[in-house]
Length: 259
Image (cartoon, rainbow, N blue to C red):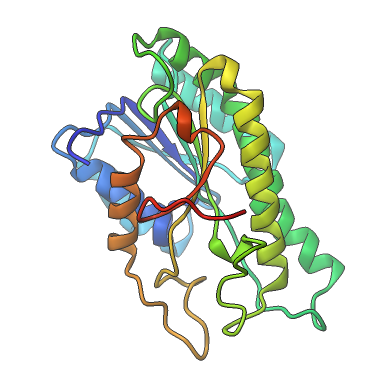
């Protein structure tokens, strides 16, 4: 991670878990980004205090209100970020916000499917659309050739639970809507890789592993991977990614995963 010199990064869903850990580790770098944008949907919520504490110590951290299912909120957030960047582009967008529900083939409902899909698939689509002009600007103003996460990139936080070939941990939880949403997010990533390649924007789906978060732990199983280890692994995987990796699905350890 020492060589990961990204100028600006935005992470969605940062009030807890993986999103909060991304913010912590970006700020802890010896060469932190000039701008770290941490988005959350409720700036007055009880879980945001740790993020506020970080912002009080790091002037390069900006907390931005963003609800990924609300187009107006996304548009307002993009305007705030653009204002802070003062004419520069956004180098790295990490679509991390996501939800899951304990559901099975028998218990899943239309409402549950729609709710999870809106957050886990439509949300990343809308956020990427809103910040696309800033990502394009970053790519255009960069002297780097090819593609990279320090130039301009969209990183969609997916899950091996959405791998149609692996169907990871089916024996633990069926989590039907979550699995279907992550499979759809993988397709969105592939489409973005094709649609934005001409603009020099790298698009990739990353699985953080089975992580000890509110979403990762279940009533009967505790996830084996800590949040800090997962994020540190991801931040080691991202720097060497290039054009050959555009549109792929990789693990926190850098292994290519099957769709």
